Length: 325
Ligand code: ASP
Image 1 (cartoon, rainbow, N blue to C red):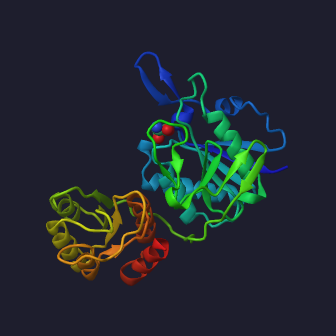
Image 2 (cartoon, rainbow, N blue to C red):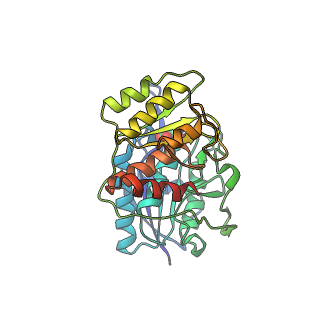
Image 3 (cartoon, rainbow, N blue to C red):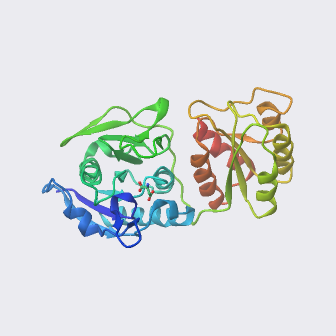
């Protein structure tokens, strides 16, 4: 019988309304989550490991790193797979962190819910059931970390939370889902190949993400650089362009040795160095690294891991460009 470790971290899936304050907060225990499952799943041996009980808006990069270590540890202990329950807000980032740091072929499945545990028809129990089935299936081996939600599962690199409240929130834009869980059947359609995993002793949390808007100043960029940022991710326009003052500051910072990485604020498509006169080509010629179709938040997780391994200069660029595709 497959042995699966269910690691709980909090999130809406483990939250309920506190009548005195009117707040929805994470307070449901792992055992209570397990007891909510409609399917007894008698063919899977489930062990609960309570890692934390917080909303994922309170999870940061070092905590994501500790969670990845906990997953590795559980898999090394002999579990056949891991399911992590997690808030949906930053699940895609923690899942990508685990994808980068867990060096095992065994299934790692993240899941959560959009409806709290005490709502009339919560999606959490069915998402956990599907995720346990997926983690127990040979089909999920070698996929890296995935998010399983509303019957579908998605690669950590590609998946994103696309809707604030609907249960079908997780999508992978142009890349699509990897497969689906149809009751007790797991159907795999494709395998992700843009994957690589690393040995790191920690991550660097001082990586800032700056979103650009029409005519925006370079103030945030300068502030970040002056206040300890070890790298800056830009979420630029279209193919990876920026207003002139941002381009001038970004290239000046690169010259001083600070890595600056360009992603797009568009939800689909790749950045590419095309435009001169302060556009993406000027940024690229000035040493800004272009990150393909990685989202800003995924590029930030990647850079935090790579800096944690001590990579800089050419090596840092090579690894980012690998994930850019
Ligand atoms: N809305 C979030 C959730 O779905 C809150 C969080 O990320 O913890 O879990």
